[in-house]
Length: 206
Image (cartoon, rainbow, N blue to C red; front, side, top):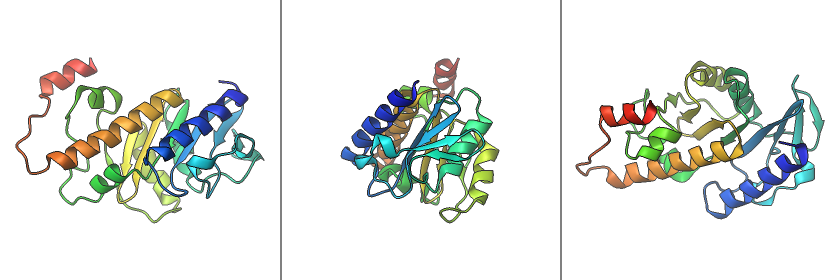
């Protein structure tokens, strides 16, 4: 994707995410791979009011080439790009239902959400929980690195999801599917529920 098209796509997707209440205030961040580096949303920027010209352009060596200073959580994005070849975009949100699930004591940290729908299995798959670290703690990057080689989506405890995709559409579709599944999981808590069987999950992943 060209620099210009990537800037336009990030701003358009950011506005859509914000307007639908998938992240609030200046929370959440988006990045996309471009020639020679990455475009990222700036620090303290609302996804609903992004300026294409002010997006942070980061070189492969981590230097800020142009634009405002990048999101303080840029290290989460860098880890995904470094550990997952073919990653074209990364999205991190503080989406309400996903964050709520990340705070529950009874969830399985090895696979947070059950296979409720086929689309969740196909777009997200196994979702590990990354232990809690305070915002901006670089130790979080190394914790995520431990999962990123095997998982394109992780859930940060008491924080929110991080999802990598081959392109912006793939990353956004996956993180929205994750949020919707988290909402379904909370709605179904306490009810006798029919999840997909291991055989059905295997069929979807084959």
